[in-house]
Length: 315
Image (cartoon, rainbow, N blue to C red; front, side, top):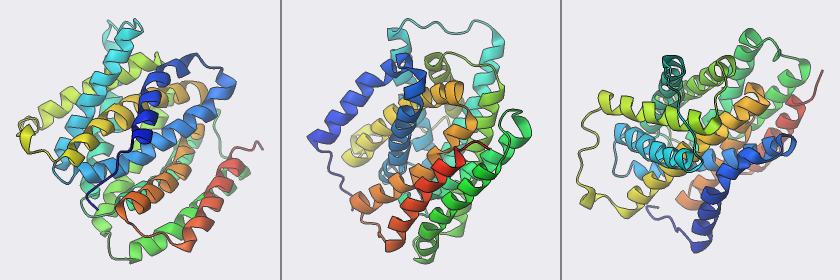
């Protein structure tokens, strides 16, 4: 259970993802939204597995701090490679501070702390509750993103699928109510951050993601100044490689994909990832960590995918 086989094929896919992701910016908008959505689902869906392995050695605060630092370094390198310049006025940086706290530090800490007492699959599954908060907040705060019967019906269908997984998972004794509530709090924080990102001015995706991660990593250092003082020689390989991947992909590149989707497709479209992330997180946990797969999961997968398509219909 402590071993994850990092095959050459998997590492090859990671390499191609790292190489190709920045060029997604220049793809046709009409095609890239769904492609970016799939990429973001895979990357974020794997984050819960990586957090689980990182927590074998690191504390929740250390997981948050290191993933932010690694993500910031990754995105700054890409931004500088493409010749991006960063804001020289205070207003954008104030916006980045908001994103850093609500969209990074707070949910990262809640998820990492919650995963001390719940499985990685359960943590991913709970993210499916984010669309409920997003749809309601979008209806209130976004003039052009009102609820309609298809969004409501699609959400009900999608959540029904999630419940087919949640019920047996909660009852199997491997998860605590406290851990579940923490991760649900993270889902709410992500929803709030999504609405804020839709209301605030849009910035270059590379600049936004690099700046937000930079601010978040600085804030994490001031909040937990001692988390970076550890004996690196004692870090188990699986925890070390997990936190490196966690910082580079689900934290770094995911931030880039997040801002691209927000700027081009909107908050409600982005919220659809939380119907698919539970599926990815659950099956990764089952395959690589030996967590149970029940027949309800297959039915849930069908319902979740159906809910996405229904919610995207126009009234």
